[in-house]
Image (cartoon, rainbow, N blue to C red; front, side, top):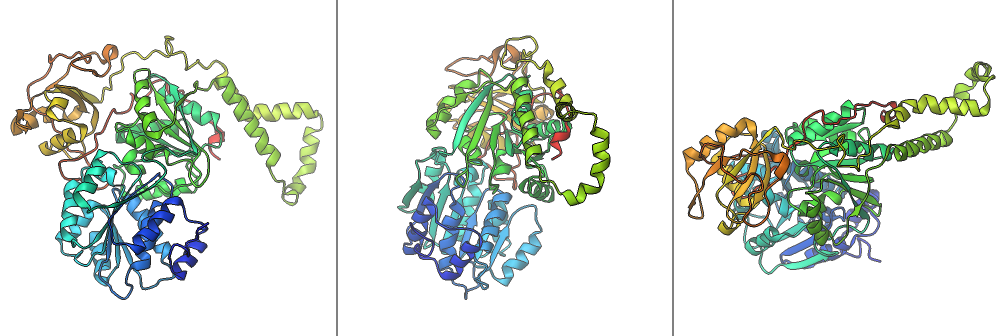
Length: 603
């Protein structure tokens, strides 16, 4: 079995890895490290989330970098602040016995002047987000003329977030002789396009099959409707007393609302999304890593780069819009040889979206019933008994109190004492679930969906579709071009053959129509027309299929105009062209929100 020394790394690096607990390299490390050290060829590397990609590209760069030369020799781009910070910290840890090797991490939301001062002192390796990296290049604070290595980490996400122009700008500032290293957990067509545009005859290596899910993760789905989605989420948490999980949502608003509901109901939870300041995000992540927070509710973008081990569950409150992102989500658990569970909460109409995900991850989803109150009570009760059984007794601390306690309890038999103890700790829980509804009976009046539209969003019709070569990324680019506002939530997008639908924060409905009317954009030579779709979403659902308008399909309610929605990323505001759409917002507050607080949450 290979060691890191066998891969060609010098002793100071190996010593640092030993200090960190690294023993044997992972498959992607065994393949990538010797390749980068021995060759100047460009490299396209696939590895599942949690398999050690950061070490795979950073260790050979540390090995080869000239510590006597203070010029920037490597630039590593990542899509989010969290991931950039994590990569920078890893490189510092790997190189702690190489005191002359310096690394700087640059990202939006932090003091740019302080970053400039650090760059002026000389650093060999720069880790940055695309927006801040371009800002520093424009200020002539970051000079990349001597760069030997350019790393594109999570390249698919950088495209999804709309950073194509920034990538082009960084490429222009680097010499043609550099070695480009592209690492990704998924390889959709857009990433292949990056390889074609930015790389020259790249060598390709993989760890496992492309886009395939981890063997350590099992995949389950619960059938819910909009009214039972949040109660089902709570039951997953209640069934697993030691849960340590990330709940993924599709929008910032949905993320914050779900987190607020969990906190209100007594769970150790918090939110992580792009509306939080850097200090707030750092605080949330510190609490989560220390397990002071058991359930982290996050958007896909904010969760990129989270380096947290031992997660028991990943819960998809709603499926991601881009199916490749499911692999990123589920890869947060089942790491470092541990087992993990990925759960998807889906409605009947969303059930069909599991099939393409199964084809990508090459695994089947198992339909699991939403836990019953009886199952939950049994799990909780035995968890409580196990805790009592495993509690260590410090006799010295309590010895002086024991005689009085024995006197007070002397009239109780062993059975009575156990019954009272269990009742004291468990009566509230038992009462709560005593008459709990069966959430698997989606046809019952109690669990019926009712009107399903999200009142926070307005749904629009747009007169272009697949036949116009429209896709979600291009639609986001069109939206970004209109420059409506700083923080517009974009909802669900449905691309049909000759027309499409999208949702946007209802507060920007008028601005949206006015922006399109004023700008009069065209798309591939066609004039773009946008109208508000007035329809009862409760009966039709989102339009899908060839040539149909199930969403009412009629253009009966809006002023003619055009649509825009400039969205902010988790990091900085990216340029036009590429982008990830924001999809359905959260459900209305208070929908079947099973108010219940428990002392057991405050562990």
